[in-house]
Image 1 (cartoon, rainbow, N blue to C red):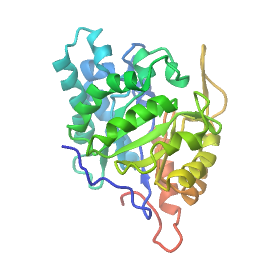
Image 2 (image 1 turned 135 degrees about the horizontal axis):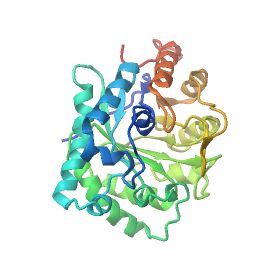
Image 3 (image 1 turned 180 degrees about the horizontal axis):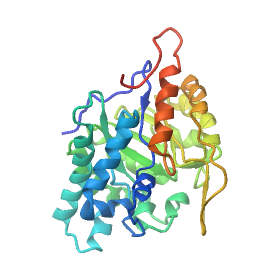
Amino acid sequence: MATVGFTVPDDTVFVADGGLATELEARGADLSDPLWSARLLIDAPEDIAAVHAAFFAAGADIATTAGYQASFDGFAARGTDRGGTTRLLNRSVRLARAAAAGRPGRWVAASVGPYGAARADGSEYVGRYGLSTAQLAAWHRPRLEVLAAGDADVLACETVPDLDEAEALVGLIRQSDTPAWLSYTIEGAATRAGQPLAEAFAVAAGVPQIVAVGVNCCAPDDVLPAIEIARAVTAKPVIVYPNSGERWTADGWAGPRRFSPDLVPAWVAAGARIIGGCCRVTPADIAGVANAVRRACIPGENPAGSSP
């Protein structure tokens, strides 16, 4: 069972990993598939394990599993039955757990990607799927139940684009003893669907199973205002793991990289207690984050940092 006691102390800063798919592609994996990196749970699980190990070696305290785009629907389209999908979801956790073996103080976060990710059409950056909260909850429930019953330390409800989907996920988390974080993908101070972040974070206030709230798969420039809003609304620890700052276009990634370890001290000072990266953030970037975290100080405490 998951570790119900996973918490984020206010005097500690954990380092999360970076872009799993980015590093898989850098190592030669072809992810041009509706399952994206989840396809490798079938075809090349050893490649996933190697990337988890690389991020841990770079200084990450938390590995997020390769289940972001994994779903019962998606695997069914590949001929995998429900039992097989359950085994693959559990494999995603075991791979991260194996990479953490022999590394004290490391944690495994089971990725719970949004409904739009399973559609493989970019709609997780829009939201507003035309489904009710009840319908979204029904879709998420089977996968979440499998992961909550498994060996992850925390559920990573991540890249959530709108309030309806967050409400569906939080309702399910309330029924579980498994800790989870809730992380939105945002544009400025709003969800991708356009709702104010204050309203979005408010759905997690007063839910003890939600151990952190925050943002991911967003521009680094949007992180600091989001931290301040999250702390004001929920008083919970904040998790942030933005993209590199580049933008995806029809021709591929474009624009300047804006992700930098130099941003980390301000994020820590504002209240971020889990810091990592998302798309295009590499193990080398995470090594820089880990070094920056070790140098950052929380007033009245020892230097905040990841595992020694």
